[in-house]
Length: 370
Image (tube, rainbow, N blue to C red):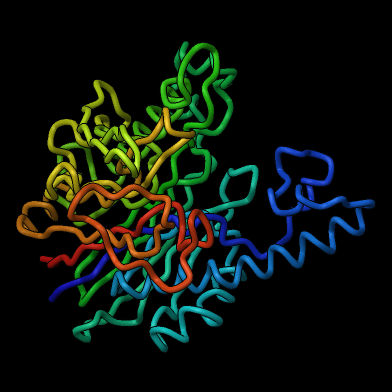
């Protein structure tokens, strides 16, 4: 019996308009900045028209990327709410895959923009085995103090001990697949953001992601018992906004690009992978083929990295020792720089930097449960 599991940051699957750009230029879309807008009412009308037209192309590409995963169970990040998820599945994904992802689950987390983690799954696997929902548990309420995870580094960032650990949630979902138990932990860790306090964005926000990773591990160990947790059927899926390795890019399209693999001395992933607690199965791919996101702030700062993870418990990784994940990159915009030999045929109407399926790539893997 096999199960196809995927994770995908769908990038702002929203069902509401954001008009804050009228007063905050940093939030204003570049298209509207081209025009003289004389009133807030005019701005709102133009923003609605722009968002609707842009979203239609974007969500067609998002649906194509999801369809390409062929997933039975899909873990999602950056979903506004269940209504947005239902509208997307019915209006876009259904037209490509038919009656597939009838089961949908999400809950409100801590994100200030309202973007949450979510789950979509079929009633049965592609080979006909039933997928049953058992229960869902949110851990969005947990504080640093409750788990004893507050540190001086967090205090220096302005994080008080009574504040919540997770920037979104660690959503725990128990399933039965053909009668076999499996637990998923859906996460979306703190984003890196711009440089601050003399540090790059990744280093400046690292203490928060470290605390989130420690909290996820603590939740799993308390659920299954510290000595036995690694030998249960579970997976951590989501966007962890961190990497252990990246591919630095130099050069340009005219002189040629150069790619250099660089290992990072510290990553929040280390907390979860330590002691063979779980395994990042994407690391079964060659180093140059592990990336799920292209990052750039201009020609002087470009790299490819893995931000999207399916971490399998020691038990599941051992029983699926030959399983190698697929990374769906056809929805990337044309500005993404691909290493030699990795170019793919883009989905129709993908733009230079938009529209696109997402800034992230879906990751999918086929697993056997025992």
